[in-house]
Length: 250
Image (cartoon, rainbow, N blue to C red):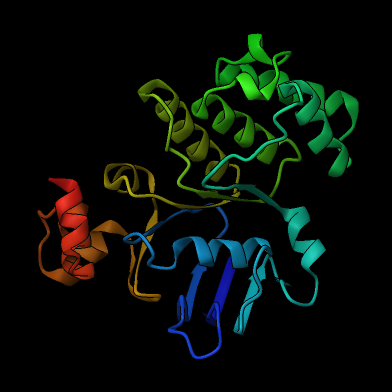
């Protein structure tokens, strides 16, 4: 469970907040899609949840643990996939995954099983001995996902996880997120792909200029806008009123 209450963040004194008075709750067993235009505050919010940034005000709790009072405790609960998979390029994939497993204290037998299972799932089991510098963006993304799952975290947070993945890998990713939610894990991810959010998310939140402008199930958001037959993309464009986003979608 993720609980965010009245959270604000500015990058410099007197600057407009990147996130302003944000409050939302994501229950265990839910897939929550976090949507917004570029620069809306999605990545800033995610970085505060996982402990890369500290909020200026408000509280963030993961499974009841306060991120300011016990940042290490929260990190143990979370598996995080950033928007850009910056890995140790000179390591082989298997060495990198073992390195992450060492950090989380995953036993040799358990890590071996998980690495085998996830690498076969993403069809990169034949590349584990290769240096990460030779990997494509999509392959690095898969390694980042495996690394995030290696300690069987209770909360999975992903920033634009579909970027760089081919259609088959995107399908595998969506299926994995659904399975993790069925295991009562909390899944929180940002995306620009409206179709993905509409198909797999239990709830979505739309952020614009640092403020949460809508939150609920896709059906609830459509009903709230009075457009039951509208697509999530259309609702997104109306709620964010972003000509930039509109031009990108054409």
